[in-house]
Image 1 (tube, rainbow, N blue to C red):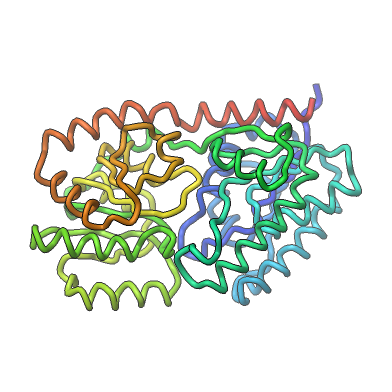
Image 2 (cartoon, one colour; image 1 turned 30 degrees about the horizontal axis):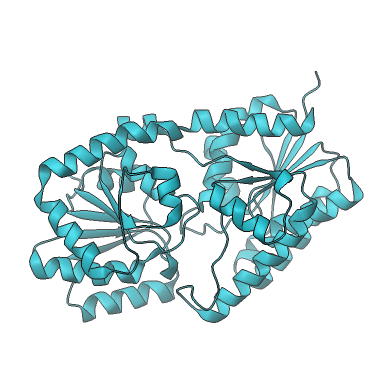
Length: 385
């Protein structure tokens, strides 16, 4: 049987040294494992996207937007990327158009192509629904823009042949927004369990009491984290926290100001964006992983910390009960006192830490990338046969 040709849109890739989104990581890891099942695979991305994708995936044909676009104001950047990608896809005769995010530089080109090529299968990934812009942490104008751009993308995605979600709550939320239930299928992200199990911690890796790793965005609970650690330090003055992840200059400066105001300069290290081996070595060498994020479609950082053999403390987001069951410590959202006390208690109880870490390490193997990639391939094949 002739192998199908596919175009992969990772056209909202925003790395610039700040880390990849979970959706970007998922597409890279999946196609690393299923690339050979297709004819040509054409990938539309930016300079940083190509740099990171080609580390893991062989034999892609790349179309890369201009570096100049990435220096523009983000909405203008996305408009130029949308125009660029639309011009690329119409040059190709393809069987499947696979969209890695719900950002409009990915969705609009797929929508336009589908109108003119109705027999081409459009596979759309939607991994997250923004909460109400008025309640979401961070800049309200940005939140408003992000929420309604996403809703616009959702409306265009009605024409997709299949919509892949990473949990059932997102599926239910999209149905409530008017998308057809018949188009949905759930396939979670995954992790490279073997990588985490085999990762060796270097002797000179600093040992922290707690670690955090994520994109530095208010929605990730980064300012909660500082308030929590202040309360921890009040009871354990020598406690050390490492915060890892890239973010804007504005957010980094706000964090530094908050840390200095709380007099936590000796207790918190802002390490910025680190490569995987270094960041996960630091996590693996720590005693507990803290993740007070307020919105997650899956919680890839939680899964990675579990695989590193470190217990996780987070807010009790509904998705965590679905994904991680009772293998992490999930606390009532926004209760900083409760969170900080749990950290203190966890640091004091070596036996409990080990028990939670060991049980979580066994559980998380169900999300190994090899199984996730096979599920994804079945979804694609169901739609192109």
